Image 1 (cartoon, rainbow, N blue to C red):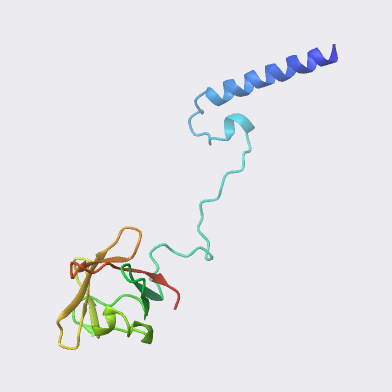
Image 2 (image 1 turned 30 degrees about the vertical axis):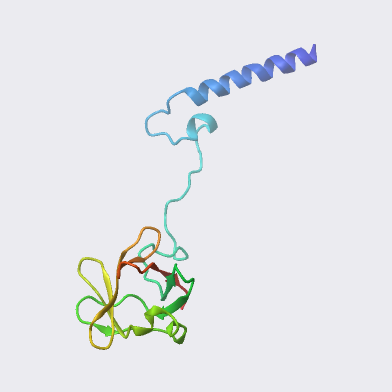
Length: 150
């Protein structure tokens, strides 16, 4: 008799639970409210100081040549828009095709241009999908720029 009562009670409870899950939530109620009843604790959406803002600029960037596997680091964030400014390349860039770069600038269309000492464009990058930038000039270059630690 106890076994039958337990099974029957469990079955009824399961039916009530399934009925609650299939019912539309009441207007203004959180998703957990129909199941758990009043006084449900919800997640606080407040962003605290320990959460880094998504628009924060990286302290350094890493250029990765996808053909050779070489990489090198540029200190600092992105250059300002307008005139060329010195590119803060680290010594590990001396063996890559980036070694000719001595200055860089950001364009108003979002592109990043790197030039040699005479102002001749060595590489041009466009904002990337999943990376900061992807090379578009020269056409045979396969270089990406990703955030790096400073």
